[in-house]
Image 1 (cartoon, one colour):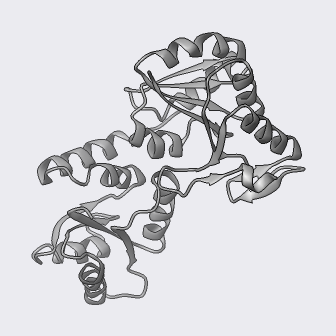
Image 2 (tube, chains in turn purple, yellow; image 1 turned 45 degrees about the vertical axis):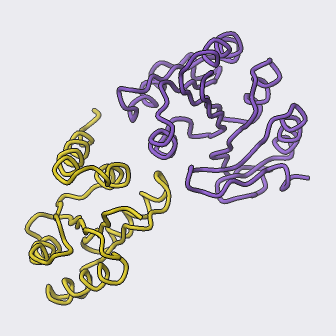
Image 3 (spheres, helix red, strand yellow; image 1 turned 135 degrees about the vertical axis):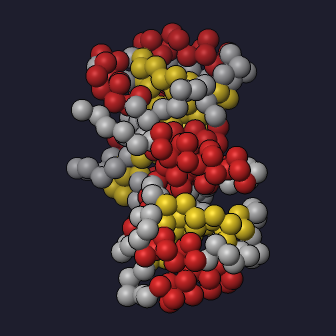
Length: 158
Length: 128
């Protein structure tokens, strides 16, 4: 059984993920689920730049992720699954990926978004997605770094 | 509590800036602090570093991180090397070096120094 961190973070692979979580979890692999990035090899190379040689990064579109993740989750690998938005994470959960916890690491200010934490700003659609994830049995917790206090998002959006 | 603590001794706001950046990627650290040489002569800077280690170091071995080799910060740090509490002075401090301090601080001393230098040097490069 793999150890998995499912994380929603607009910055995808960056310092907090590679250093903060990576040095704690020692993942074998990072799976980025993004329809757009799965078609952008140059962008993928930029994201891979900061990774140590011990971590492989793959960029899958949503369909590839729904098909490919079950085998990865069945393995002994430690992995980090990243999406840049809650919608993609909700689609993974809705697509049958067994997610028990979602970590929100960075969703930033934008039109129509309300600040919950310095690094978590949600639109009303995002709040609905949090409720839908929770209804599917997924705990949605904001925590930018392992050393930070986790915040259950559901309690902030009801 | 670990066996080591660290002080970044640098010009201007570099030290506090590096620690601010470190906190963003590796979380807050309770054994790493910054001192600036702003408006301090060498003796006063040395006294400030020493009193910080005495007050917050809790008897741990101190590792100093200075910016420019040969600069006034580094000179002050080197003059503290004979003191019992200071074990080493790194120079050319950068964020990768401090990240390695956070994660490798419990290695035996020789291994610790080699690993920090290797990682921080390896993190310097250019994309063009």
